[in-house]
Amino acid sequence: MQKLSLREKSILAGLFLAKFDERGLKYLGFDNFTEAFNVIGFSLEVKPMSVKNYRDEFDPIFPNKRQGWHKREIRQYCKDIYNSFKDLDIRNFSNLLKEIIYENHERDVLMEQVAKEEDRESSFAKRLITGQAAEHYFKENYITIDVFKNYQIEDTTKHGCGFDFKLHAENKEFLGIEVKGLNNSSGNIALTNKEYSVAQLLRERYFLFIVKNFKEIPFHDYFGNPLNSKLNFNRIETTVSFN
Image 1 (cartoon, rainbow, N blue to C red):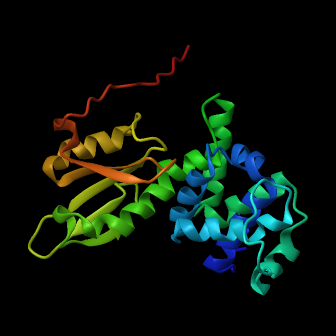
Image 2: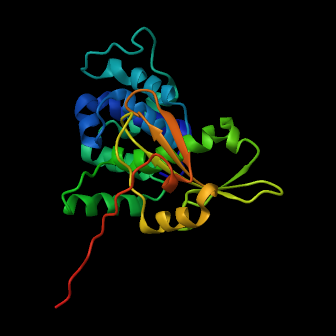
Image 3: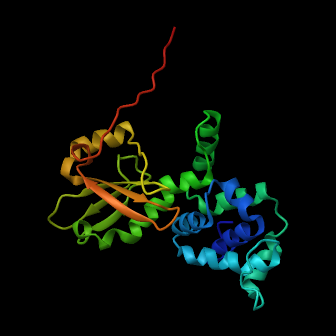
């Protein structure tokens, strides 16, 4: 599966959404198709419209209310994907999507299972929104923000250093950027103990970048020195007692 091109991965996502329709959305944890296009698109680093177009490509094959691209024949490279994967059931197809979209497949699948065991909200959609999709949105858009414009970006998501991206520029101190995602235009976010501690240490050089509204049209907000901003943080601790 790792050998699939970005286009082939986008086609597979479109095939899943056409074949399983509303049931497929619910199974993955999406509220609507726009959210699915946005989240999968940003996670794959392709345009959300590409995912939609591939769903529309396959719509005439399946019994749903959409007509899709019914006035022309399905393109051959889409037929090839269809013929290879059309017989997958919803469980195996969703597992395939997780394998090709999750950047850290084993960890993210494990975290889904852990959340489910703890009766917390757990879904493919939520994990992508709160992580991968939001991070890729930042990489695509950070250069348009004046305060970040002259910086080079370094991905530190796997370094465990308390922020997702390090921005650096000649003769300037680096900036640490922690990215969070929300499916709605408002909601709650959480900082880990490490993220909070690093934010305390870096102060004005620490930015919290929040990507909002994946359900409709994603947009962002950001806060320098977030612990000394209009945001209100409440400490939540989990303790264990030993007898």
